[in-house]
Structure formats: C-alpha cells, structure tokens
Length: 292
Image 1 (cartoon, rainbow, N blue to C red):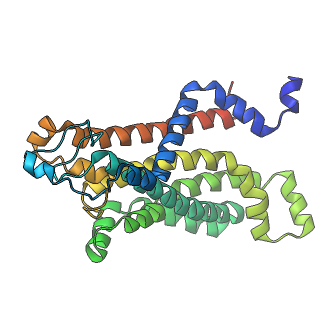
Image 2 (image 1 turned 90 degrees about the vertical axis):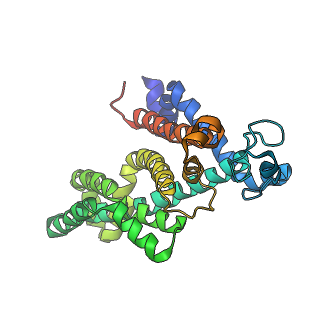
Image 3 (image 1 turned 180 degrees about the vertical axis):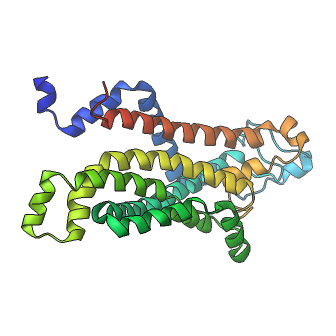
C-alpha cells in the first residue's frame, strides 16, 4: 500500500496497463503499423515499386499475379502491387484518423468546456446545437460536398472531424459541471483568474484520462469511417486507400479467384481498428481509479 502511495499517477497507470497483455500486444502491433506507414516511401524506394506503378506483365499474363516473388502480396487487376498500396493505405488511414480526431477533440473540448463552466443558457444553446448535429444525415452531407468539390480525402477528414465532436463535448461538459464546484475552483476565483484560464488550465487537465481514451477509440471509428467512405467512392478512386482496394473486388469472379486483392486490405482494417479498440479498453482500465 505504501509502495502505491509513493508512485506517481503515471507509474500506477503504466503498471495497470501492463497487466492487460492483450492491450500491450495491440499497442505493439499499432507501433509496427505506424512505423511501416512512416517509412513507406523508403520501403517503396528499396523495392523499386510505386503505389500506382503498373506491371505490364499482368496484361501479358492475362490475370493478376498471386502473392510471391517480386510482388509479396500479389497485384490487383490493373497490375499494381498490393503490398505497396497497402502500406500507402496505412498512411492515409492513420492520417485521416489523426486529423479527424484532432479536429473533433479541439471542438469538443472547447464547446464542452464552455457549456460545463458557464451552464445556464449557454449550456442549453450548446446542447441544442449538439442535438441538431447528431440528427444530421452525415452521408448525405458528404455526398453533397463531394459532388461540389469532387472526391477527395481532405473533405472526408474535415467532415468526420466537424461532426464527430459531440460525444466528447457531452462528456467534458458532464465532468466540468462537477469539477467547477470543487474547492480548488474557489481558489481560482480568489486569485481573480480569467474564465479562459480557469477552463483550459485548471479544469480541462482534470479530464485528461477521458480524453486519452476518447482519442484512442475515436481513431478506430475514423479509420473505419474513412474505409467505408472510400469503398463507396467518396475518395478519389486513384488514391491508395484500404476502402478503394476492397472496392476493386467488384465481381464474384474476382472475389473467388483473386482473394488477395480484397482480403489483405480487409485484414489490415480489422487488425488496425481492433488494436485501437483493445488499447482503448486497456487504457480505460488503467486510468480508472476504481478498477481492481
């Protein structure tokens, strides 16, 4: 007991997290995926294969190359290397996740912080805004914007971020409604600190544990959404995204005979999303002081 009291909160959190072996393995896998995504251009250069480079022998052969030899995971029906496109897809998916979650976190923390701190009519207005956003047909909105701007991943990132902040805002608001009545907030009043400083320096840091969990789980949701939207054609068809790769398996013949074209990106999506969810669950256990 005395040993736990002498440890910092971070040390206790890490100790708790290490107990969850599945979450640790998931974190290691995510680290490997991130490293592969980071060094994808170098790997592509070493192998001498680009994401849009076409192997003309595919057209001579009459069908995609199966996994093995020069093409580790085979080629698609256009003669493009599946392995390299898979790596470039990881860069896009992780980038979309980071940007979308970053936007939603900033908006959610700001709106939730304001609602929870001020309460009253300000709180009511923000809650009504959240309700309006929650009933928006996001897919219809995206299709409309894509029809205007053309298929692009940047619009997907922006929309996912702008409509995805409501859950974070609700949670932050709920925590601040409780925290603002604590004794340490009386001290901030006595010191004459500004409302901005009270919210973002003294209140928001007390919600860090929730934000860490929310960001981790939000990454999984954003990656899954991006893959789905790519599959539906809302991202440029030429972009090497996991959703676009699965979309290439449109015919029953391709699904039956060229399994590597759609199975590999499907497995990549499953592993990445599952790892983020497992790490999020592990962090929830590690950061919950009531866990045993």
